[in-house]
Image: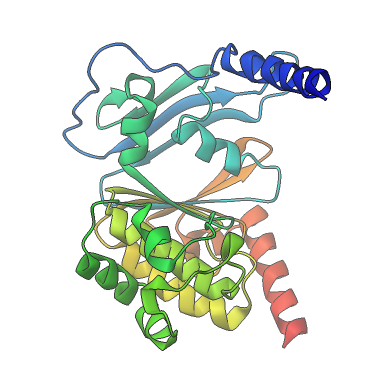
Length: 285
């Protein structure tokens, strides 16, 4: 039995050491992190592909998101929206072009420091098999109980939590299985509120919810956006009237840009997406 366990342990060790020895795809720069004077985001000539022989996933992306501004990036599946989020969070490094935050190239920021400045609410927010309070504290471990409650109130989650027998100490199950889709999204929004980062990325934050729940969650999202530099990634066009600019992405390129009402007056992908989504809503009703 010893030899059998030894062989299995050696095989596992070989896999672990191979992983440890792998060079990370993204390297932190040497020296102290930059100190941005503002949270102005500027993207110029951005190009990216996952391998040299593959086509460009993003090809010549240009936009500016001023501090406190709101920009939405929309487009069909496969347009490159999620890739852009991964680049902004430095899960990958771009090959050509520039992304500047507060006047500094994004590659000048260590990964941990950059992610400290950005709060993300996505469709697939990970929730742990732990209590509501513990899941919220992931955003800011040193937060007080009152700060936790304030974040829950702003996300319109406080009343639901208080109705639970254990309140904030209620265990929500693996991936929050004891919560509804809307409650999981509100918990993700409360976590972002507690983090209180100056930059907010909403990546399909209301996707997968029914129409009524989506409307309720969107109100919590608007409260979260207040005073923050906000980038919304979505393929659903409801609620984009409040955006300063909308970029329409298709096959890695920006094919249209403008405000909601301007884009609806133009022939193009945005209006086709709008008409198609409204036809689906009419059929559902």
